[in-house]
Image (cartoon, rainbow, N blue to C red; front, side):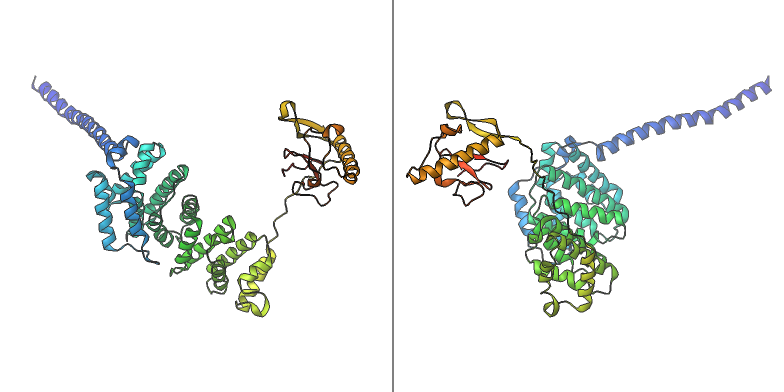
Length: 442
């Protein structure tokens, strides 16, 4: 009997480790579930959670901060220690302690949780949440700049921050928000310096999209000024991207988007002669966009450089490269104007109906022309007799009398109520257009 007992005890010993593993798995599963719930509570949720994390900020207090930020010196693309401390204190005032701790955490995983909470809440388009975010918009934009100026900046951080900015600017654009100067200065100088010249093309393209979207919520002329200031960067890649961006904005909004167009375009012309190939090509692309913006008028382009020949203020090498580039650009095709059919057509023109009200009806062009010719003949005969008005019933036209000196026939010099191709101007300011032209009122 003893061997049997030993075998049973050994079998129990062999089963006990398996049972222990099963129990540990159950315990681990429970811990994992609890961990997921905790993570959801910390970094998940949506708009309702954000209402508990961000406190309401008055418009007056926000504008006060923005005015202070608007006085930031030109060319400042790094946040100093005092500004960082002010940012921490301001965020602590309008965010819950746990959320504030996540935002200012040095670890990317931690502060990315805070970004995700804001992104999800903005995507839900809840008005109350949007108001809370807008209330501290200047602080959030400065926080993004603070992260961009961090020495530990890497591709993953840049990608996350750009995605957040895309979501934020889209929400602001959808709600037709008007950005304050201080808010723009909290972001643009740092974004252009740190990201516009990034080595990876997707990052540069994302930065370009954000800048173009900002033009919908902030004056394009001021954004162009920020781009011009960023040209003082030591990075040639940043200068190249800013030049292309300036040219794109001029083509999009016109030459007057720049407060000093001559100075801006002269800057492009001087960059053509630089030794850096990328910057030189960017300058030529920008000048090509200026050329398109002035409807491919070469004289206007050269006027910004001082004129042609000896009057030009650029070096001969620059002039040669600009001339060759402009030769490659084909003028924009002129829009085709649809020609009217020679066949007789009916046009709906206002005709006096019952009770003196205007009612739309179809009038045959030939009939109208015949009536007009008859009216001309009658006018000439009665003009000799000293009559100043005629009865419209005679010619089957609107019954209101018309002034004889206020219409032209056959494209002659008419009075103040004449249409582009002539017409009959009635006393009730109703013009009968002939030949399909639009009616006008005297």
